Length: 517
Image 1 (spheres, one colour):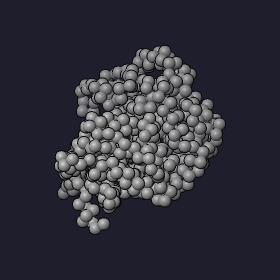
Image 2 (cartoon, one colour):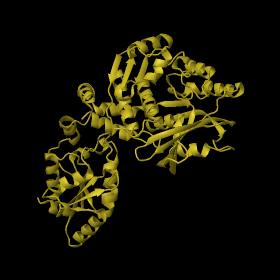
Image 3 (cartoon, helix red, strand yellow):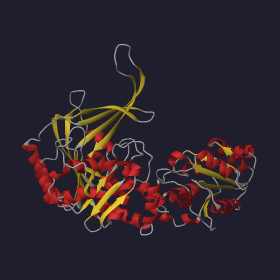
Image 4 (spheres, one colour):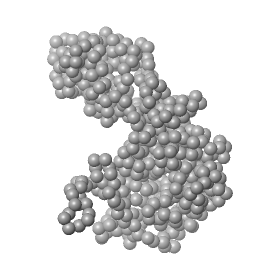
């Protein structure tokens, strides 16, 4: 088909709405198909042909790249290329790119007589997103009907995984072996069962500020780079981010933390409203306060073009928690810890989690998951060895090297030495671009490569991995499953700017499905 004829079929949403309205006034039936259609295959050809038989005009809308929620590296083909490919089919009359994650809006805009989906969507309760119900309601609300084709089906995702180098080479080999033993349906089912876990998160509150600037040159009289302020964002970091990640997977979440009253600009500021707005609604809060302290603020200056970080200002009060406030926190924990299945200590070493609080957590938590983060403000002083006991530890490679005072031994040796100091049967050590090494006493060592080399921002990725892998480690997940989930979450987390949003369970489920097709 000539390129001009193909491009003539591709319309904007407004153009499409006008064309469909005119078509329907002429008494013709309009059929709508919608999807990603990343790799066209014989199943799509038969699907479109069957759909065209339901009416006179076949419209196909595709999901814009921004809304393709299948994890890193997807879609393989851009929405423009996908639109051109579909327009080349003789049976397709018009194609449009949808500016939304679902077809609900386009259904209500063009009011098709039939909305046609593949037979895999006929089992509506198996749709991970649950959007098929919304789409069905939308088409019925405009007087149309939904229809499911019954022809042969293929999986674009499976074909891409097999025939395209979508994943790094070591990840591809890992996934081929992993899916011989595990499948996405059972993994997702186990993840969904975590919703009933009662989880307490304790740790430092951090306000992450991103201030976006652009370089405007070097002043004549100074050896510095002048920058122009553009705009800023403020994120809920530290234990707030961990609580948000957990709350997506579990219904019952409690956050315990300490909030200061001073802000970096001086004076008194109430961060409670900010926290209330940023936390998921199912996160209950027990936040102790000390107005004389400054709430930790980490202000990063970035170039928005590629999120290149110029420098960071950390506003941190070095303080020792006074005995009276410490006693209040300890008394609260002693009473509350027994109510929770999992306790996650997100320990940034900024003063909240004292030795006495560590002892209470270690003694009273049913299942204790811990991360002690090493950062520029505490390097070498906030070590995992401050905890005498943990059921699950998630730290990165430099953190275990610091804790063991050993830069040269292999990770298996370091984990063995760590276990001599801490009674812990489950440990994950993340290694950045090298993936992760997971150890379970019942299961041994299990290395997992990274599943994507696509990175937007590394900030917050460790918190996301800690949050979800802790829940899996506390459940009946094997060492292999915890490692797989940890790196799947990490691959999604590095696509999020800072802690702008938590890792979404449905996005994780879809990514797992993509990985294991």
